[in-house]
Length: 224
Image 1 (cartoon, one colour):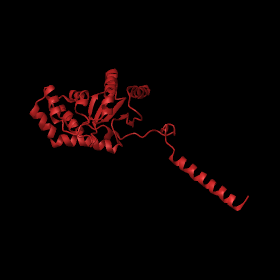
Image 2 (tube, helix red, strand yellow):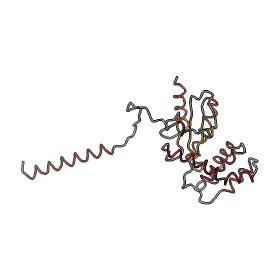
Image 3 (cartoon, helix red, strand yellow):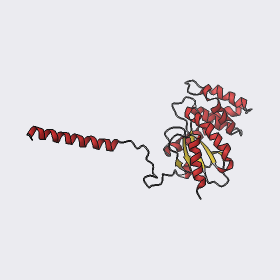
Image 4 (cartoon, one colour):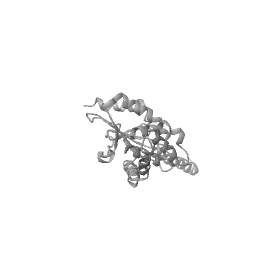
């Protein structure tokens, strides 16, 4: 073998080795899970995941299964998940606790205001009806760069709320702080987008479809 041929072979071997190493380092983690690696998935701190003032839409009598959702009321994906969550709540009744936590995304013009509206309605005992109206009418106000304060006042009127009291609560610094505290907790827990679900403290992977969440619930209920 000539000297030039030997050099060429050596260069090719080095290139192959480098490319192989890069492919190994950058290969996708598709299909990986902590369970497959023999490790338990990380569990979120219970004291941060569910605060004493967190909103429980449904509550289990035995506390065996808790689903926590960090949501953005303007988020279309959250709106798409909403019917499935409501269906699961209806099916499991008092067997599963469902906790709603706010995670308004700053780029969504009306997300924080919507969360404040739900919180303000809750001060008059209408948190869940307002929460439902937000999702049921999301196409009317979502994904727009104009304020929908008047729209939310209309929802309050539809629910028969005391409007001056509702508006005062809507703008109350305590209401704003309450919503932002949820978002801060979500950030602490690694929430980066919405909706993000936690099932018994473990972040739910993949798309939160009705079927997938139901399967996760059944696995938890089957545990002793």
